[in-house]
Amino acid sequence: MARELLPAYAAIVASGVLVAATGLAVPFIIKSATDEVVAGLQGSGGGVPAVLWLAFLLLLVDVANTLISNVGGYLGDVMAIRLRSILSRNYFEKLLRLPQRYFDNELTGTIISRLQRSITETTGFLNMFANNFLPMLLSVFASLVIIGWYSWWLALLMLAMYPLFTWLTALTSRRWQKLEKAKNLEFDIAGGRFAEVVGQIRVVKSFVAEPRELAHFNGRYDTTIGITREQSAYWHKMDVARRGALNLIFFGIYAIIFTSTISGAFTLGVMVLLIQLVNMARQPVQGMSFLVDSSQRAITGCIDYFKVMDEPAEFEGIPSADAEAGTLQTPLGQPVVSFTDARFAYGDDNAEVLRGLSFDVRRGERVAFVGESGVGKTTLTSLLLGLYHLTSGTLRVDGRDLTEVPLAQLRSQVGVVFQDPALFSGTIRENIAYGRPDATEEEITTAARRSHAHGFIIALPGGYDAEIGERGVKLSGGQKQRIAVARAMLKDAPILVLDEATSSLDSKAERLVQEGLEELMADRTTLIIAHRLSTISSVDRIITMRDGLIDEIGTPADLALTDGIYAELLSLQASASKADRKRLQRYEILG
Ligand SMILES: Nc1ncnc2c1ncn2[C@@H]1O[C@H](COP(=O)(O)OP(=O)(O)OP(=O)(O)O)[C@@H](O)[C@H]1O
Ligand SMILES: [Mg+2]
Image (cartoon, rainbow, N blue to C red; front, side, top):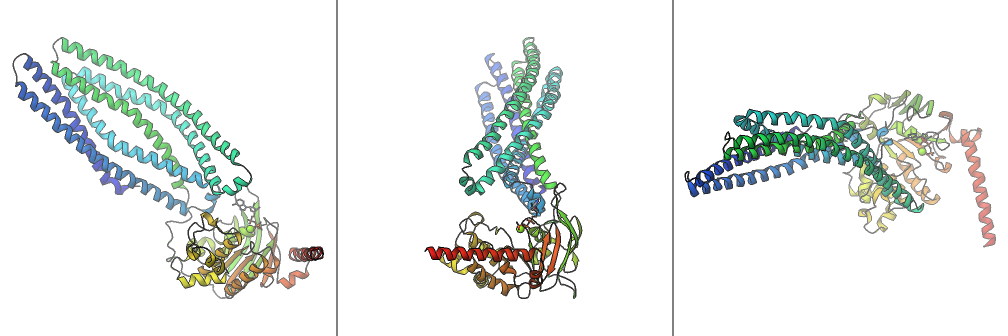
């Protein structure tokens, strides 16, 4: 995963080993000093110069230790951030390749919170591992050998301590991890809601839902406090047991060292040396529980991370917009879009939205879809974009089965104005040019003029450089829609999908945008969804949908004469506008 970091990692480990080695020299110097002092007190040995020399040696070792550990620290910092960037990059790259379905089921905030945690824990652990684990191992090994040299009894006692301690720690692990997972789940849910609330703060405010949202958030965090209480109490209980065992072992070790010295088996210097070594070897044991603790965290963090990394992706590798853009060519006589016996449900538990519908759209044709809200019109466009796949039946674009067309190539052929305009923070210019970042100034303004956005854009402070806020909150609904239309126009794709593209505009603005769209639709295959029937009166064909099936297909004139959905809607709108006119007249009389 992060093979490029191996050299840096090795350097950190090396510096750790050097730090440990310099650390190991200290007990020996102190031993020699003790022996010199004892000899000096008895009137022999090298006297003051020898002791001073040893003190100087200590200084050298300490300075080396300081320098090396700081270099290691620097390398560790750099490696941590590089690792972080690699992990984050891979995660984002993977997310970008996941199918729409994944995002339907996850909250944005949860995705982010999971990434944060996984990365912090993993980098923290690797860093700690590099800085502590190997050096620790080294000093333990060296200490044991040296202790064994003086007393194999002592070495054996020390040796017994590690498996015992590790075993006791491993015992703790399973329950600890389970609790950690439960806690993370709470964090993720709270984080997911948090991001959603911030993103839609307007709705929260309007419903005075702040107390409820806060209570929900607090509730989640309160739960984590409860879980942590249990988790920590358990961990510390086990730690008492672990360290209690350790204390007993050390009782034996000290007893041996003291009695051996008093009986003359060890010199005073050896005693001082052994006490230091034993303590050096003891630290890792305690450090080990920290290591186990953070490795457990890292494991739980990693599991979430790799769960995302293991999700089946929509395509291999990030598609390059240019490489994939080669135009699909409709063989003569083939429909551009063709659904055959298409069945579709959003999930196994969801009801079928499409229940075996078939229709063709020919090249250059304009087809409108009409049907009740929720009948599956937007679903059709999502399928056409390859965001979801049919449960059964076939969908062909330019004569090719959708499962055989590279998704990026397909999507580059379809310009969409979504039902929800979905803009990005940033400038108007960036938003219009989202599909073609290399578009010239002129192309951008032309698109804006055709979508009748130019007028309001230049009136904004900043004009095309005006920042529009997250998802475009600083624009009105109709303004957002016109930017979205301009964005689709600039993409200049052979298939155009307009999903309620002008629904937020008043009739006058709609007519103007419609003119721009007419121009755009001229030699393009267009699929239009509109509730306002005036906008689809000039299409070639209308397809009406009912209960996941096609109800009627025909020209607007044909369908107006049947008693189908279109005719029904037409008469409803006509009577509505008649009623409106009457109401207006009454106002005029009153006024
Ligand atoms: N991501 C989704 N996951 C599960 N069900 C969905 C999803 N999107 C839409 N649906 C369901 O699929 C059905 C069709 O939705 P669709 O958005 O296609 O309707 P529509 O015809 O575009 O309606 P409208 O005119 O209101 O935009 C609806 O019943 C809806 O609840
Ligand atoms: Mg819709």
